[in-house]
Image (cartoon, rainbow, N blue to C red; front, side, top):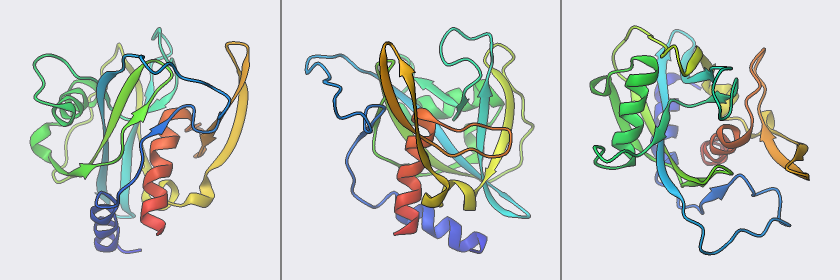
Length: 200
């Protein structure tokens, strides 16, 4: 698929109607409390043009972090009081975490929200990086910044379901390993939504 076709596929993906997703999608026996309070958050699923086509920017979280150490994630985080909305939060966090200026990003739209086991309602913000930038990982949070090819993250066949014990129960989740990077959990689930829409 040529870069122009890839961009068109992303633009089409945000127009598709779809249900919210959850870290518990593959675990139907889990009953979530109806009165649970979820904190709004935004993550930036930013695609950058390279000689090989579009590639999405991902981070490897610092192994020193209290929550999700060493995991693969999008730049992003919770919505703060100063943020206009979750899109603004995702763009702000991307600048803080990897040095990507918000002025360099064309926001295409958003994908369905995703509920995490940590109590966040995350909105994936789909964007195109329109200008080159110097990657500046935030030392306290980001161990590494890398890119994953469009063809990898938008191919449903790249995703598998695995499981492990978590808090005394077996929990299943999506994975999409890429070389030394183990993409799994919420990040893989949100990317799987994108893959399903692009492949339609």
